[in-house]
Length: 193
Image 1 (cartoon, rainbow, N blue to C red):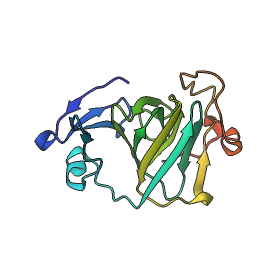
Image 2 (image 1 turned 180 degrees about the horizontal axis):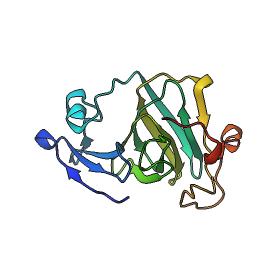
Image 3 (image 1 turned 45 degrees about the vertical axis):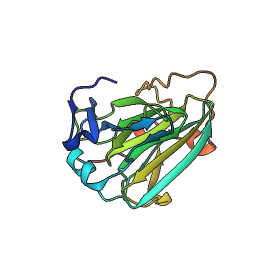
């Protein structure tokens, strides 16, 4: 991850770290910890708006996967979803691919380590494909979505596309669903304007 800019919103509730992909950024929450454990706000509408997320979330998702499970790369061509992704337990390598033809970073990807330890969140606006690989023995991934899941509009981009050359930092053979194994090549994939 090449952090281009770090911004601290009011009251230091979140640290915003930009990425090379326009609109995609990392959020580090302010964590309050002591011998009992920790507390942090994983979502606050006002604070998120200060960070630049003004989208309305309509659905929360939670997945649990074991080591080397690779999910994705998913996106919806109609009813596209913005996603605010975080890991409650474990660690993943989270990947966003720019699918917007009009973007200067069309076809580029960014990978970010998200974990229950670093408590980072990744904002992926609509217009991107998204996926992750589990690095730890198990990982609980939670994400908020800006539109409802619409299976008729969902598309899958090939995780191992030779043109994208995503470095999944594989540790052994990835575990991939039958649906994800049939992902489209980037050059043939449906994209956004």
